[in-house]
Image (cartoon, rainbow, N blue to C red; front, side):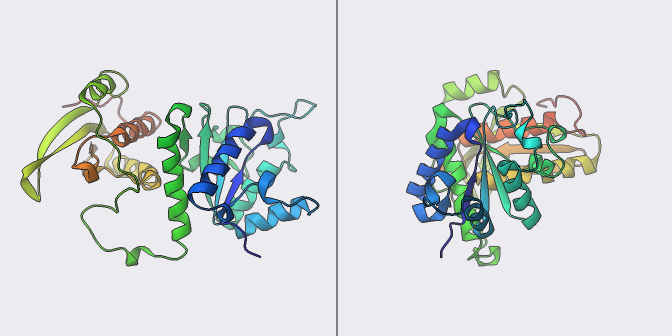
Length: 294
């Protein structure tokens, strides 16, 4: 019997409705037979634990739905469920890690990835997984990032990178964004992206056209730190199918962000990727304070 390649793991006491909405969206956009969630995919009267195990075994990727109470959820004695060996969410994560299955954390309602030292050691490695945040006010935008990653994971079973034609630019994102307005860009640069600036330069392959990019320079303690940082943030770029133009000069990393498939203009994807880079830099031990624009 066919089992779906996408497995949704969630905690009922945390965000059942959001998990249900995620399931409905994946079912509509990718296919109902492609995604498993226990509330809709298990027939009445069947062996629930065994169905769960079978679904996990057949899956290619587990979507780990995390809300504000995911790690705090406790039993009637006040003990955290995640610390209990028979907790099903913990068992699902342990199984996926043991089998080397891909895990995609999806954060809802302002939830953050928990620190590794606040988790049982058996599942602490999930903190290294790049998460996707779903914001209620930007659902249509954010859910596309999840759907793109799920489609890519499913396609990988049938295709290899050697089958993708070589190109200067990556395969276009399924949905083209709109260019961000000058007003919104100015607000972003004046506030949470104060270390970034807007730069304009000719396109190397067509000097008569220009590219408009976000630019920031990051400084590091050593050359190896700079390279390690690039390796750290690269997986996140793959998840959202949005990639930087960057250059490493010794202990400095110069990052340029633009959306090439809308004519090399700045979109919300560049804003979000800039925030992702800044957050990673703020937490990176090899960083050298706040990098200046010069």
